Length: 379
Image 1 (cartoon, rainbow, N blue to C red):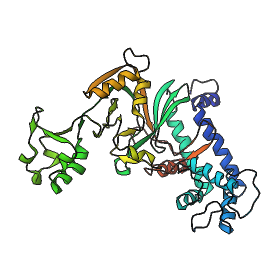
Image 2: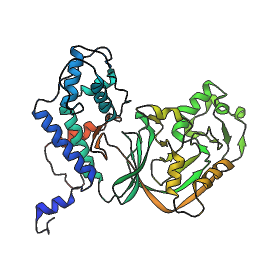
Image 3: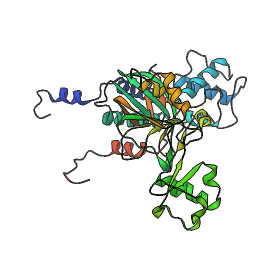
Image 4: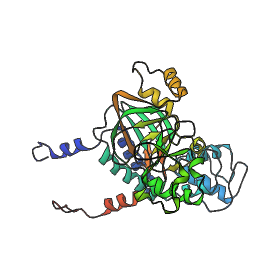
């Protein structure tokens, strides 16, 4: 910066130039314009509203959706018609809610978030863009933890996407970068220390059939089987538990039929899951930190494209055989779990999500704090 001929231009070059950042800037300008013209009024609480309803709350709903441009070209009124139902559906889709066109409590809760709070949300995510949108490469796998989605990005475009389940708030999925280096078909699952301490041991103490129900075998330090009924479970402690608990491959395995491995300090990876029904939920924070993938075999197929001997048919045959098999990727693929509570999608539609892990407030506080210079060595 000191050596730059034009400091303003040098600073401009450091700003992200990617479409997601530009989209957020445009959305911020638009929402500030909405605020300058009075914002929007809240929809009064009450019963669920749906097509055919009339009254003052419907009129308030129409005004609210007109203000945010979800309802366009429709005259004011107090009737819940098909146009209003479609506008409610559009609003729901861009807030991660079930798109049913019915204004229930959860939908109205999101509508009643003030425009100022949405502006703050956009500012926070622009700041995340300034942190993260650098040196991201032409092809990578990205996970939006707060949006419960996985994307395969190629040349800044979404080539493929699928739903994911992420960590519960008290077992939050972290943000980091790594590279997927290999896949494991028909994986075994070894119970990690956290789940052993918080879930398995307490359950086994209450019910001695827990291990059998979960298909977990006990192994000693050399990998030899140990009879579960020979262990003093009442006095077992995770901190000094001398055994390993392992689940054999199969459809009920906690990792499903495939896992995607990448080095990181968090013991987090992508994997299949037998808990398929949970992908139908709007908010999908159910794991212990790892990322469960809705269509993992398609992801495996994409990552192995062009790699000799790994067609989708071969993947299916490998899984059907039932044996555990690892496959190293010829070219490792960058993977990037991220956390965005606001973004603009490929169609130019601004999306908002709830702050699953309560991270936005700290960023917003930093943005609002007075400028200060951090002294070297001082945190």
